[in-house]
Amino acid sequence: MKCLAVCQDEAVAKTLHHALVPTFEFTCLVERQPLARRLQDSGLPCLAGDPRRADSYVKADVTSQTCVIIEDPGKRGLRRILMAVQDAGAALLYVLKTPNLLQRSWNDELRLEFPEVTELDLAELLSGPLLTQLSRSTTRAKVQQYQRYFADADRVLILLHNNPDPDAMASGLALRTVLRRTKTTAIIGALEDVTRPENLRMEKLLDIHVERITPDAFNDFDRIATVDVQPHYFGNALPKVDLVIDHHPEQPGYTAIYKDIRADFGSTSTILTEHLRAVDLSISERTATAMLYAIKSDTLFFARHTNRSDLDAFTYLYPLADAAMIRKMEGAKITLERMEYVHRAMKHGALHNQVFTAFLGSSSREDFIPYLADFFLQLEDVKWTVVAGVVDDTLIVSVRNLGYTRNAGEFVRQSFAAIGSAGGHRSMAKALVPLESFREKFGNLDDAQVPQALHQLINAFLKD
Ligand SMILES: [Mn+2]
Image 1 (cartoon, protein in one colour):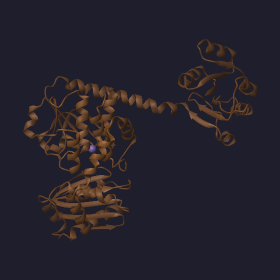
Image 2 (cartoon, protein in one colour):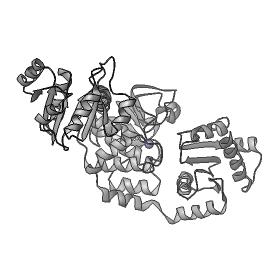
Image 3 (tube, rainbow, N blue to C red):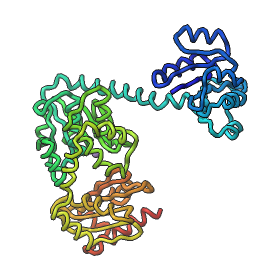
Image 4 (tube, rainbow, N blue to C red):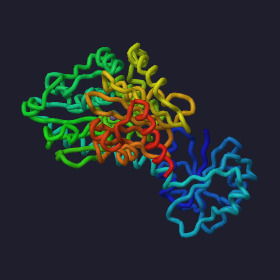
């Protein structure tokens, strides 16, 4: 395809030439003969001619299929140029705005007069790729620093949160790749085993070994990194670590030599995709599959808290991963045990004004509670879910929402931080309250009154 650039400036002509060749057959039209000669001498096809005359374009063989890019000439008559180009039969017209003009010709009046013209802004055209390049190089510097710092260690621990989820496990595999280590030189560990059925299935299908460790064992490692979790989670057991990579809001109360915490990212795997790309490491099919599944599950397939980087990481990982394997992992989500809890939540739950609340009473495992909070969010007309249950004398509350009107983390902090622990994201949050403290604050409620109390709390929160 042919492209004619009507240029005022040597640098702009050369930049366009460089960017468009070889995709386009590129020629440039400039007004002054000496400039035309200089450009020709540097190997750039160039004509000299008056851009305000139609025959200049006829000489340049412009047709309705030629892209004509016109650099805004400032005060020197853009209108006449546009009219001349149109007279010569061109239809694909672009005006390029460059930042060094004191006065632009391209204005609202011309916009109305030439509605078929597309505006291009040189600075905007540059900014996307430029920002990507710059942020990739700052990430590269950060990654190379921690790679060097971990290089001479004999034993490395990559520590995950309790009951590791897909994002935690995938991040463990990814960090092991970044550190160029194997399962014997970098152990992926957690204090409590994987429990949720689909997570167990992922662990098995992808042959990820999460080693169960105790806090006493922390001293046996030369370097410790936490992924998808920050050290404060482990209380006093871990006041200092070497590296933290996480997408939860940054917490105080620990020191880390290196950290990369990005609370606006949908998953830790997204951050680690950027680390792997920044240092040009190849990603195995197994790791890519784990990471892709992690992004999908942490963002509920982009239904909650997602940004451009998550989509970008997904696109990058997709061709590297085994999609059939992901379907297999997802198949494990519905179990008979869970169906029983769904039934229980239906019986003891209520839906009012797009808010579903349920109290399960005592629950044999903690993971049923967040499972149900996710499950009922799929219902038509449900925007918020608040599901609570009791495990070992602790009331556990899981909150989910779709749409970003109010913050779930803020809700649990406002309601429960004073009597227990509470925290989370905009779209998912959790509170843990000792049953005794709950009763002290809300009274000795029976099983039917607890969901009412929860309902009042969330309603009051959503109203103000
Ligand atoms: Mn995560």
